Image 1 (cartoon, rainbow, N blue to C red):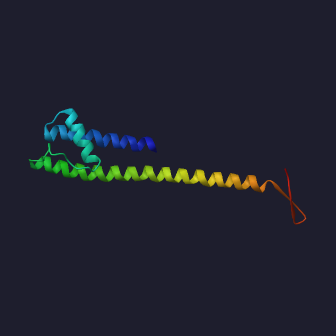
Image 2: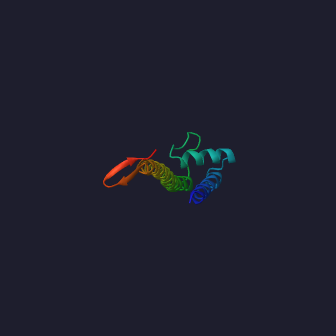
Image 3: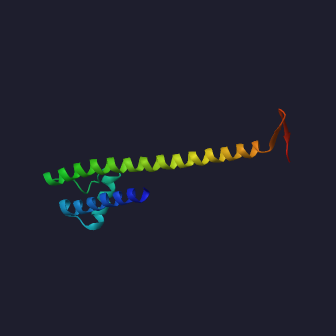
Length: 115
């Protein structure tokens, strides 16, 4: 699942780089920089102000869709991490409880400590 999310992010990033390169007529490094700013919801820098209608349209559509997808994937990854950590803590508590309970052997309503 993780690899699919990374591939989706890479595709979105490549689309953004190509779009900034085509619509804004900037170099590859500037296109990469602007894509990073737009995707991470930080906004645009002062160097790339949309002047034409096609630039404005691309910028709005790309910024909205990439931000929503980026935040969705980030929240999914964070929730997976929290779930895995929670399961690990539950398993450790269960193992500790089982280890504690195995120390006692029931015998006629009494527990004798084995040790």
